[in-house]
Length: 233
Image (cartoon, rainbow, N blue to C red; front, side, top):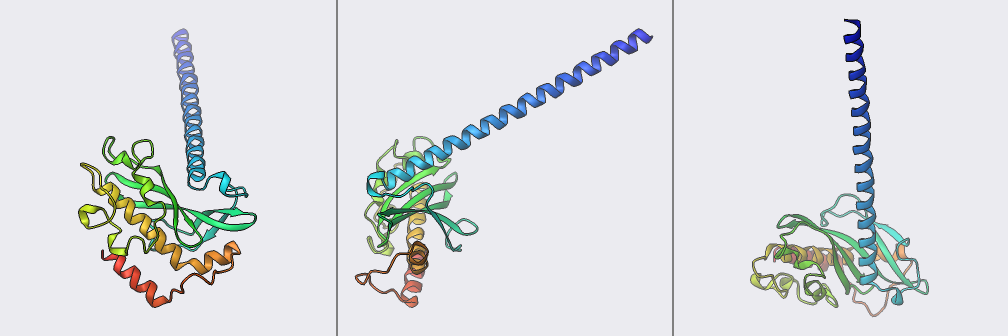
C-alpha cells in the first residue's frame, strides 16, 4: 500500500509540474505573440504617418512630436485626442489625427487623418478594421486607390451636403456590394475636419502657430450652422 501511495504522489507531482510548465509556456507564447502584434501595429502606424506627410516635407521627429487636444463628443473616442505634429524648420505645417469610424459594416474602423494648418486634407489612411474581404476592405491602399480621393479636400470642398457616397447624393464613390464601409469612412473624415475647424485656435496655441490673416474668420454661429447641416445630411 505504501508503494502504491508513493507512486500516486509521484504521478500527482509529475502532472502538477507538467501543468505548471505547460501553462507557463502558453502564457509566455501569448505574451510574445501580443508583443509582436503591437510591434507590427506600431510599424504599420508609423508607415501610414510617413505616407500622409513624407519625411521630405518635414524636418522634425514626427513620431515623437505630439500634442494633446480637447476631447469632443463629435469624435467616437473617449478622452483627449493625441495628435502628431509635422514641422518644417520649427514651423507647424500640419497635424495627423487618429480618428475612429464607429459604424463600419463589421465594427470600428481606425483611421489617420492628416490636415494642414489651413484645414486641407493631406492624406487619410486606414490602420485597422474588420470589414469584409473583397468588399469593404477596398478602403486599404493595397486593395484600391479609393482612400486617396480625400487628398486636397476640405470642409467646404465638397460642400457639406456632398460629404457622402454617391448613392446618398454625395461626392464619393461607394464600392460594388458595399456602401456602409465607405460611407462610414467619409462621415468620420468629415467629422475630423469639423473638429479641426472648431478647435483651430486651441490647436494653433498648442502648436505655437500664429494665425494667418488670409484665413476667413469663422464665428460660433457659422460653426454651429455647418455642424448642424453636416449632421443632418
